[in-house]
Length: 255
Image (tube, rainbow, N blue to C red; front, side, top):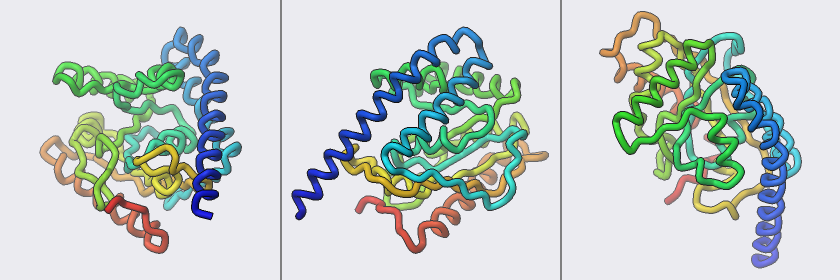
């Protein structure tokens, strides 16, 4: 029985990856022309990715769900922050965004075939190899905010591979929030690690994939001296939320 389950798991994962690639190939023809239309074109890329994520979820048996702890104003600008523990955070991200947004993404992801083309067109790339390149990413994020577009940042920077709900946060998202006086909207990806652990793509499985929208955190009248305080406030809200939603269904943190 153990070997049968493993075979079924591999077959399912192969099917899911095949669907992923085919849908990506269908999206690429819409992405490349959109690059000619600047900001509006990038917005179209996110619309296409939203449709792609929902179709892929349907085909592989994943149920997308959005939980709003308070009413969410889709017409407002936010700096969205979320926990990061799985590659499944990406489809969850594009599935839950219903307003213009730009994601700060790792430069290394552009190396993936097919996906890299769409990724490069949709995100603001961060290359941490030098202070100059990091500063360029920050300027691009601020430019998006100046055009009325929200931004999305994983404040942990990379996957959380610890046995805690969250890793330590970087300052970037909170400095930008204060400098631009943009409220922070924390999100929680409470099922993505259960859908696919960061250890292996062969741990992908069907089921619920919910995103929780927490109460926004205002930054009115805060200064850069308050970055540490704001970062801790957001960290505490997200940590409390992760413990709350996974109390009866623990996230499989590594041992």
